[in-house]
Image 1 (cartoon, rainbow, N blue to C red):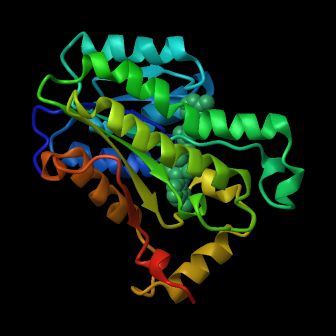
Image 2: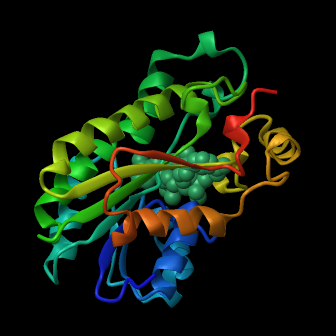
Length: 254
Ligand SMILES: NC(=O)c1ccc[n+]([C@@H]2O[C@H](COP(=O)([O-])OP(=O)(O)OC[C@H]3O[C@@H](n4cnc5c(N)ncnc54)[C@H](O)[C@@H]3O)[C@@H](O)[C@H]2O)c1
């Protein structure tokens, strides 16, 4: 896939195990020019080190709950040219709202998980749109099958992923006339910083590997490859889709 002369912004690299990092590496290897955001000052150095070899065009602080910062990111990056694609790979839930009884979810925990993991896609798409290349653009987010099935322990993040997937469809509709596509990749379980806080995550990996048609877990690279397809012109007819990269696990009934 050729991303020469294509420019994009990546939200969600924390370290080289982040899904966003794998997508970025693949984009960079294929010629893309990338700008990165980091969530806060504490993450500036680790993110900067993690993406150094990808020659970032910008590295900008952005807490995705701060809409002004989102707007500034797009203004800053688009000063040197239009944007062709955006990767939203952001999620968070309070530790006490993962695991245990779902009915114990606090209002504050519900808000936090939904705001960070679902709402943030909306202002990101909205503020990207004025700066997207006039030939069109592609935006992706990362979701998980717990949006429509029960994964004990994933709890409030399942609710957040359901909201995220619905937002993908509504945004795809709204921005379709501007030729901006919005899609989600639904990845199988991958060992990352965020995944480590989900109780029973290792069991999830074991069960996926034993029950999926491909009899294994997916890799970061496989998730990145499908992401590149969605970010490229090869997927020009696809928007509002939730594409599973899960070794087929989601088709199984038993
Ligand atoms: N790892 C998995 O098994 C898996 C499977 C399916 C989907 N996903 C999704 O992939 C995405 C990336 O997660 P990951 O697994 O790579 O973990 P990760 O911990 O590497 O990435 C999560 C990112 O979210 C960012 N973030 C959290 N709150 C933020 C905020 N307020 N503002 C800006 N950034 C914020 C963090 O800084 C971090 O970079 C998430 O949406 C996650 O739900 C992960």
